[in-house]
Image (cartoon, rainbow, N blue to C red; front, side, top):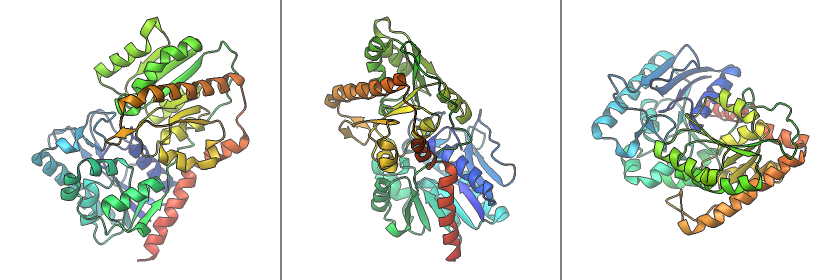
Length: 413
């Protein structure tokens, strides 16, 4: 198959960007020919492949503003969709239309895969009206559409001619059907996967009661990720388990980083470290292999692949009870001790916790972390059946399912 891949963001640094890159790599491994349309800006550059690459250059003479991000806070400088002017939207649209038309003329794809059910998906569908277009929802598109229905109605009016939509979870499937009025028969729940060539484990060392235990968080340093709650409980955890260290990796505003440091280091507590910006996948995997417990106390996520990546590196995890993740892992991993869930507080606008619920959330977060600390200290080996369950969520497994659907779509034409 000749497949054109389309995304309006960097092909890295975010969940959807990593998904894009992994999908291209895996389909290439299966012998398919790929062409790429994606956003780029300094200081980033990409070497996914050499031929049939159609980047849209932001922070340039033609596009003098940063990449528009599906989240308002991105791990790189970005423009917020809801704040874009008419002029910016016109410049943005024309730049992508040019590259899409160039790709259509020179590459002549058999089908197109577009990431996010948002502005660029509608443009892609209009340009490739004579070619199957498959969209991949990463849930941030649904979030934007629910928050800004007037933007959805204006710039994403009709996606009904999509050949298929890949959803992260059954929860996303229902949202896609409701928000975009897409035939449920076209929506395929695929989940997500990790790259086993990058995320893997070495033999873990045994721990004595005095050995350091590294807790890590990796992601945006913003309130919706629950990082301030994690920083709040760290002093209490540190007093109970003096050997722990908390490492936070990711981009955040200067004020946010200062506040996190103040919360985590109250009362002269030490062992708190921050790293900025979010590293490349290979560097993140190296850091994970040196750690013991991964923590994601987020109030909202689509399907956080980073939890799968952490488990693949041998880390025990503590995660908010995110419906998509909990449903995906089911009994295969939820009862193995690799993951401890923290019940979510009541939420407003999808990712804002009700203030009165936070003390209980903090308490449950601390208890879940303590359980994993105790498991690390006990040196309980991870069962071979658990490793097999983790490997079922690797990219080679996922892409086989997706390629089969793509081939079926082409066979119907």
